[in-house]
Amino acid sequence: MKPAPFAYTRPTTLTRALETLAGEPDAKVLAGGQSLVPLLSMRLAAPAALVDINGIAGLDQIEVDDDGVRVGALARHAAVLAHPGARQAQPLLAMALHHVAHPTIRNRGTTVGSIVHADAAAEMPVVLRLLGGSVEAVSSTGTRTIEAADLFVGPLESSLRHDEIAVSAYFPRLGPGEGVAFDELARRHGDYAMCGVAALVRVQDGAVVSARAGYLSVNDTPVVVDLTASLAGGVDDASLTAAGEAALLELEPAEDIHATAAYRAQLVRVLTGRVLRAAYDHALGRA
Ligand code: FAD
View 1 (cartoon, helix red, strand yellow):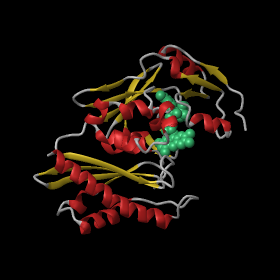
View 2: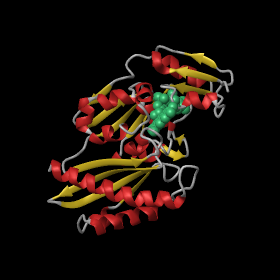
View 3: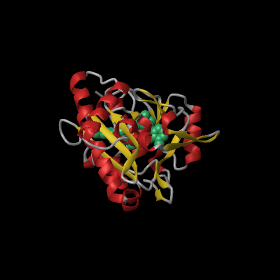
View 4: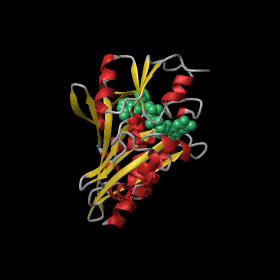
């Protein structure tokens, strides 16, 4: 199948791109095209116009400072994965990006595009949500910061307005005493996962003072669950099992062609324990 007809522009400035978006309510931003182009080809999306942002200079920056990592709208997954400063400042980025699709798709697809596409099966929205990151959105009327907690509003739906371009995503640096881990189960490496879990654990004097886990491919948006209470008395098989059960109380594992709800629930149990233990060990190792 071929896409429905659309107008195509490739502005070379952000200002021109924003003017075009403001003037055409049915326009879509085109970044890496790894999600949008298949949707066009299957006619699941039929925008009147595409605003290709790939000609705008400066949007591919990856900046690391004392507080975290800022990833520009045109930074490809592969560039973020390979960036030593980003990997060092926030190791969860590389841990999760390793599971995003295949190298050819990571060479073209953008991390910011993945976030604003807001697929509950994608890795980077969960990572941003778990870390408490944000997206900087620009329109012809101004700039705003959207906290990750306010960004993912429904299946494939973000709170970004149609006239806005997400120019960057911001991931806080891993703090003292913190450890992270990521794991998922997919039928083949690089496929969308049937369930994935990211964890952020903070320890003080060997005890867990904060434990949170983010889930992909479970609910229809990325969900973060606070599991501190389960691990506050210690990290062992019993408390990790309890954490998995506590997580399920907050989740709604869905059935689809890839997995039954019961199988997904079992993946939540197993991956929650595995990832929390790995994040705890990571935190202890950094202490
Ligand atoms: P595009 O496809 O260009 O755009 C996607 C959507 O976001 C569009 O609605 C577009 O208008 C909007 N958009 C993009 N950038 C901006 C911006 N800066 N401002 C405003 N709106 C914007 N992803 C995973 O996370 N995990 C996987 O396992 C995975 N597997 C894949 C397997 C295959 C075979 C393919 C084709 C893709 C897979 N992907 C996977 C998707 C891939 O990560 C995409 O790159 C990503 O989801 C979207 O990024 P993009 O730059 O390609 O965005």
